[in-house]
Amino acid sequence: MTEATQNATRAFARKGFRISRGNVDRIMNIASPLGLLLLWEVAARLGWIDVRFFPAPSKIFAVMMQLIDNGQLWVHLKASMYRLFWGFVWGGVPALVLGVAMGLNRTLRALVEPIVSATYPIPKSAILPLILLIFGLGEPSKVVMVAIGLFFPILINTIAGVLEIQKIYFDVSRNFGADRLQVFRTVALPGAMPLIMTGVKLGVGMGLILISLAEMVGAKSGLGYMMWNAWEILSVETMYVGLIVIAALGVLFTVLLNELERWLVPWKAAR
Amino acid sequence: MSASTLASAQQMSGAQSLSGAQSLSGAQSLSGEQDVKIRLRNVSKVFETRRGPFVALDSISLDIPTGCFFMIVGPSGCGKTTLLRILAGLETHTSGSIEISPPPPGRPSNSMIFQGDSLFPWMTVWENAAYGLTMRRKPQGEVKEKVSHYLNRTGLLRFADHYPHQLSGGMRQRVSIARAFANDPDILLMDEPFSALDEQNKVLLQEELLKIWEETRKTVLFITHSVDEAVTLGDRIMVMTAHPGREKATLDVPFERPRQVLELRARPAYGEFVFNIWSYLREEVQRARAQDEGRPQ
Image 1 (tube, chains in turn orange, blue):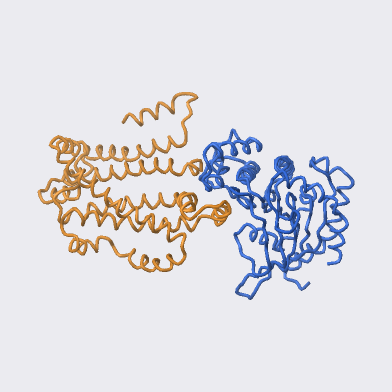
Image 2: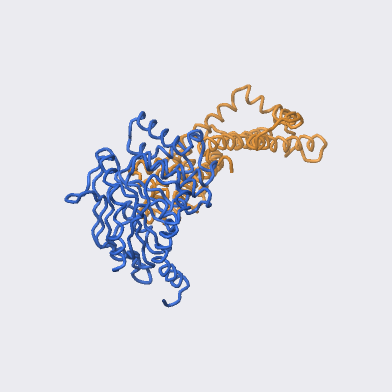
């Protein structure tokens, strides 16, 4: 058992100790994937599953330590994170600005909405060849893939978030003399923030999917490349290391984004 | 119609106390007139709907003196909220003229206290109360001074860091009152601010509102469907007809200030005056109900 779960158990056992609902949520968020890993290890050791395809987590962990020691994992992780970050910047920020603007402006919404509806359902994996053709095999094509993946969920949720804001708040801001920028900053953006955060969470998930995919084709670094390469040399453990790192990233981002949400949307915290 | 002119001619006594308030606030008045803050002449509002034009306001004319606590009472759907929204700049009128005397430099013309929840859920009590001043980019010192004054007056200073969802309905409405007063407008517009509150909270808030208002004696236009509220708070009451909204009668409230809500309501004269207003209103409420039920009048 990890320190966190032990602490939690101890905290529950101690008489009169009150643990906040938020902390219970956090502990459970960490505990569930760890429990699954434990089950896997037991199954592998007892021979319930074929270890050629499903090696024990401890073996995977050993390979992971090896990859950490020789610095390879860091190289790939850094390359993927770098692309994810720039994809977030190039996809997320325009989506946020355009989303709020479309939510506020009916004309803009009428103009852009059909284009969004037409392009959104296209599978992002299907446009990878086109992206590679346009942006080449270098960094830009990976960043663009991530950016496109992030763009749509953030845009669509931001528009919905602004549209959901009750009219009375816009009346208040008008009556109290807010100019356009102030309405944007004090009403539209914070009012849409709960749904924007939902969009960001969906977008980051989509970004992780797309970055792995893009790196499997025409890249010489990144977690996706590492996994593809492991398949070519039949190193099953390395493939799992890649999967686990991506899964861990998913959890890490969820935790971080939930923290960010608690900080950005404090008025929803108690609900 | 003749009844309305008679009523206002009969009881002009309440108007005398208003001139003192005007010099206090130092506000300008409309050109040519002694102390009229808002003047409406034949103001109409027609909404274009799918079923054709809908007359919300039909030729409203009224003068609101500077420093007057002016009440508009009417059955629901009579267009009184529309009238307030027009004056707040949130709606435009279709015809007629509206004159509002300009506010002193550096102060806004009007601030509205809305019906129901209008506090920004994403701002703390303090940020909500400071909203108008912040939007007008007032210096920090002034914001701090005014906001803490009005939060203190409404008993909410120690809740300054709370979010609206952590407050009761009555407390939230007190924050809206603080927000409007802190903005220091020339005119206060109130749209049934207490209608969602229970009776006990309502009386307390009316009392608090009167106390805060006594400090500044701003011009107030207050919309309500409650005759009790109108008589308790107002200097002058305009009764509106059922749809389409017209002036039915305008009466001056014959009670001196400062007023104590419960003490005032215990007086026999209070009951008589409420009855008097009701005699104008009853028929209109019945008409509004008939309209709601879709029966011919």
